[in-house]
Structures are given as structure tokens and as C-alpha cells.
Image 1 (spheres, one colour):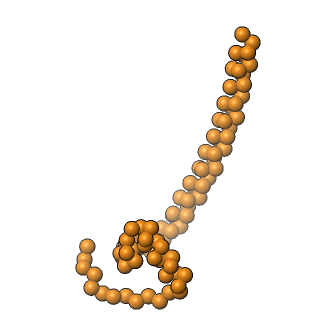
Image 2 (cartoon, one colour; image 1 turned 180 degrees about the vertical axis):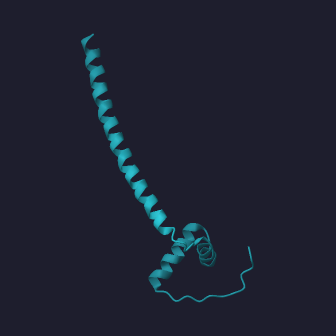
Image 3 (cartoon, helix red, strand yellow; image 1 turned 120 degrees about the horizontal axis):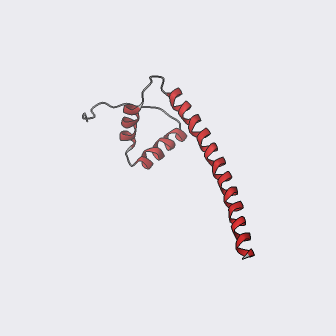
Length: 90
């Protein structure tokens, strides 16, 4: 990584500064390092829409998985009741 030799002053509200500091702390980096990493990771190439589309797909998949688990739970309950009733008859 290149040596940091340039200073950038950014004005922000106290709330924004607190958010920045909290995010940096959670990432385990200084505010300066967090900003450098964020700048390096940002790609203004229009891929934000791609991420949103992937998120929608994930949300749909999650709903479908939860529904399938619900169906499986109900089927398991029915199966257990069937075998419990069979066991009681013997």
C-alpha cells in the first residue's frame, strides 16, 4: 500500500461523524483506514442496481425456503401422529 501523505478535510454533522467512527470501530480500523478502504472498495460503475437485484432474489429465496420449512414441519407432524397412532394400536 502507498504511504499516505495527503490530508483530506471533510465536514459532516456530529451524527455522521459518530456513524463513521462506529463503523470504523466495528471494522477494527482507524477512521482514516476505514475511509481509505471505503474509497478503494467503491466502484461507481452502476453495479449498485446489480446488488439490489441480487438482494431481491435472496429475499424471495428466503421466503420460499421458510415456506418449504413450514410445509416440511407440518408434514413431519402428520407423519409423527400417524406412527404414534400405529404404535398405540399394537
